[in-house]
Length: 192
Image (tube, rainbow, N blue to C red; front, side):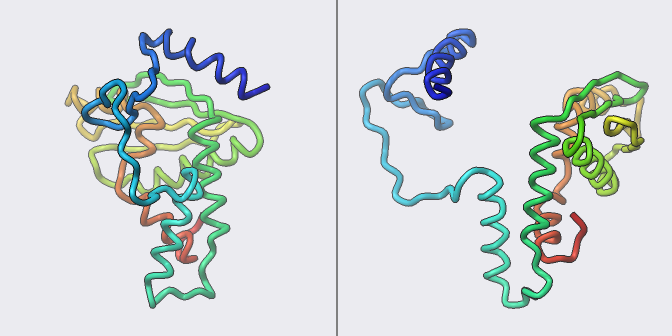
């Protein structure tokens, strides 16, 4: 029944966006496939599964390739729990945005496991947001957190616009620490 509803909803959704899907249409970036042209067959599979599974598989490959891996400390379950938190924060949290001088304040809320994930993720990310021209202040509230992000140069309109344009979830992606954090959680050297 669910597949039928999805099959019926897809054309309506695409039409609402001014798009239609046609046989032979490519979803790849670059030059679109010509109607009637056969799509090139992949020569090897590259995806190990859905995103969480693929992220775990990537870390496992790194650990297995490193002869210095201390398997007595490896904790892939902690990494899985962290990725669940990332999913809850990204897909199930509610975010209300308010412009403040020099940036924005985000009230991020949820209930139960989602609220707990919000608190862990926002605090953890804030502690890793050193430098980069931003200040990140996290305040715990009943439903989750209030995060205020401001530019260290509030008179720079571009910097302030970047904060507001990225919004909470965009700001959560900022920084090159995510992959290293995942590896650290899996190695047992960083906290989930």
